[in-house]
Image (cartoon, rainbow, N blue to C red; front, side):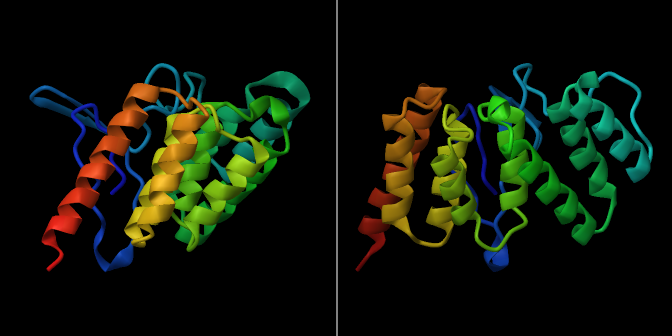
Length: 202
């Protein structure tokens, strides 16, 4: 599980090699856990307040309106991706891929944290997540956000590519991805895990 927590808990790797990117907000003595935290400025990767479409056809119509300037297209794709969790894994993956490809084609959405969260959701379902994060950095998508580098480093660490994980943290810190304080804390956690790993080595 990829955990972004204000209490600086260490990431917990899922069993059977399955990766999970999960964001957790933890306060003293209280957990508020959600895979959608930190996606929007208000701390919510939430559905919009408007009445929600109830079918794929409804969402397709909403996308058509949004793409013509009638609504926030990033929010419509966000709502669609969250709604799609009730569908089969194949259908979820298809919708996420469409959302990410569509939004990546518009430079004005490049630093929208909601788009980045959709990409993280997609990486969670793909077999080569590190390539997705490398692609995002190369295209300048999400590079202002610490989340890009945290998720990238986590998936590399899960594969025991520790040098690659350290480099991902370095890239985020060098690029001044925000919030820097959280990213520095994640890097410190990583460094401590590497120190403990060396101590356990015979």
